[in-house]
Image (cartoon, rainbow, N blue to C red):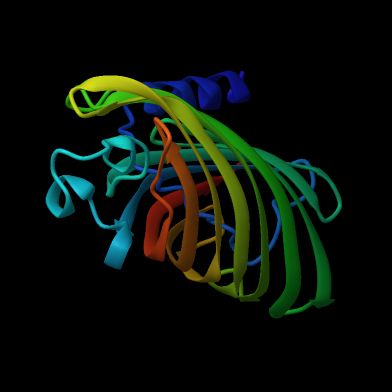
Length: 242
């Protein structure tokens, strides 16, 4: 019954989400303990910089691909994770209109009042791009690999630092020169991630920041729109452990 409730929250947030590709890692300093469940609720933002800024400002009247598919913005976020074995967990995250499956493993380096671990994950994801101001619609699929070094202090503080790398494919029909035309884009993204949590045994507040470089290979109605730049992805939330 617990997972039915978690699933309902995740699906509700997916329905409410916008189209910003703001998907935080929310790694924490460890995996979810065996036979325990973590539930997180919060939000995330995508802040594109440089050439990745919102094209509605930079080049109005041109391709609406980036405006629809890779715009900035804030979205609701929720996840659930279950520790199915010692040092292993499985989870599902919904952030905006993107759904990601998390499969994670930790190697414990030190136990005790101060616990240290290396946490690595594999995370396929997918989602849809809803119509935004009649700019077009489509979908996305991708795969991410996060890796962090985490420290827990007395079950109260958590710190984690590492990196994330991902590849993504976006497709759909988007506006260009007054009509909808087929577009597709393949992107790569990599950069550091840092986060912290503070709380008591069963409840923690989490904040996290990813700073990544993206490069996109985009084709829209035969026109090449390749470009790259930096993007910031802050995330925040409350984690409950049952």
